[in-house]
Figure 1 (cartoon, rainbow, N blue to C red):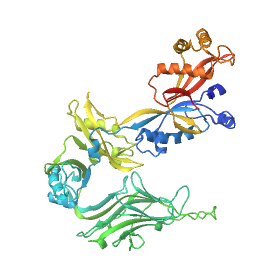
Figure 2: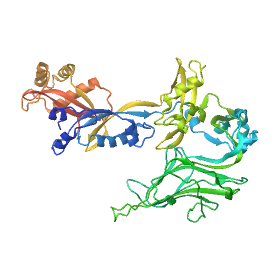
Figure 3: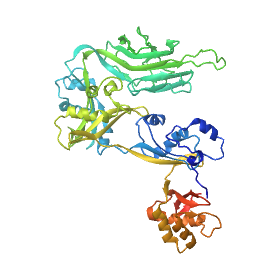
Figure 4: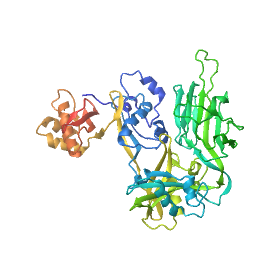
Length: 557
C-alpha cells in the first residue's frame, strides 16, 4: 500500500489558507515527492464571479462539484496526490412554496389604448384612478381563451400627479440589464460585440487588443400607425473613438430579417454621442409618422495590422446606450411603474391577495444612488434583497400581525442571466420581517486523484485508546502476539519478521473493527484515512487509506 506523507512532516511548516509561499514552491517544484496538503476554504463573491455565477451561489450540489475544481487548480498549483481541501459554499435550495407561481407568471404590459379605456387619455392611469378595479375588464378584453387558474402579472404606469400636455413617450426602451427584445446580427468578425450591462447595452470591439468587427443590434418592429409629429431621443456615450462615424443609428421601413438587403436611413444628431453619458435633442422623426419601422445600432471596429505591431491603426470604440425614446404630443408627468397579480377563476379575473410586487417608487425609497436598489429599480447579486426588504416591509406595513406572511416579488438582474423576476416569502415574527432561507451554506471536500481535483468524501481519523482496546478484544484470538503487544504499548509493531508484527492485512482487519464500530452505516465507496501509532524501531505514526466496497473495508489502490 502507498503511505500518505504530509508536507508538514517534510517541511516543518504549516500552509495556511490559499496563499502558498512561492519561494518554497519554486524549490519544491522539481522535487520527486509531491506536496500533500490539507486546507479549508470558503468561496468569496469574487470566486462566484470568476465562475460566472451572478447569483453568488450554486444551483445544485452537482454544479458545485463541476465548478469548484477550476478554482482549486489555480489556488493550489503544486499540491499532489492525496491533498484535500474542505470548501465552504452557498447552495440555492429554492424559493418558498408558491413563489414560482408568481415569478413565472404571464406578464401583460399595458398599452396606451388600455389606459384610454379607463378614461386616462395618457400613458398611464391618472392619479385618481383605482387601477385594481379597472384592470380585470382590460385583461378580459385583451387575453384570449384564458384557462381556469391562469395567473397574470399586470404591469402598468400610474401618474403620481396630474399629467400635463407636452411631449410624451410613445415608445421607450430602457436598456438597464436587458436587450429589451433587440436582436444581435453578426455581419463580420469573430467577437461578441454587443452585450447587456447593468445600466445599458454596450458595443465594444476591444478584447485586450483592437479587432475588426461589424455587428448590428436591431429593434423589434415598431408600429407607428396613426401617430404623427414624432420625435426621437437617445441617451448614449461614446469612448475611445478615433472615427465616430464608425457607429451609426439607422432606421428602416422595409427590414424583413436581413440587414444587408434592407434600406437604412442614418439618424445624424445635432448632439451626437460624447465621452459623457448624455441625452440627445428631440430629433425630428416625422418622416416615419404612420410607418412600421426597425431601428438599428450598427457598430464597426477596425483591428490593428499584425504586420506593423508598432503602429496603432486600429479603432475600437466603446458605445454605451442607456435608453431610446420615440415621443409624440400627449400627456406627460412623473409615473410609478407598478404590477399586480390576477387569477382567472370562475370566468373572471380576480385580484390575488397576499402577494406584493415592488414598484419603481418602492425601489427608489430604498435609495437611488450608485449601488442602491433605486438606481435601476432592481436587486442583484451585489444588491441582495434581504439587505433591504425587512426594513422596507417594516415601514410599508407598520401594523403587521404576528406570523403574518407576505410573498414579495421583485425585479432582479444577474450578470450571467440578465433581467429576471424573483421573489421570496417573508414572515413577521417577534417584530421583524424575515425571509425564507432560499440559500444555505454548506461544504464539499475535494481531493487530488490522478492529478486532478475531484469531489472527495475522505474522512481523516486517528485511532484512540478506546479503539486500540476494541481491536485487542476483537482480534485477540486471531492475532494473540500482535494484540498482546498492542495492549501493552498502545501501538502496532510494524517491524518486519517480528513475532508481534502487524502486517498490512492484519492492519486492515483492525481498521475494519474500528470503522464498523464508529461508522456502521457508512455508504458504499466511503473513504477514510486512518492514522495509527506504530513502532518500527522508533515510535511514529502511519496513515492507511481505505474505502468501503461491496460492504467491506479494503485498501484504496
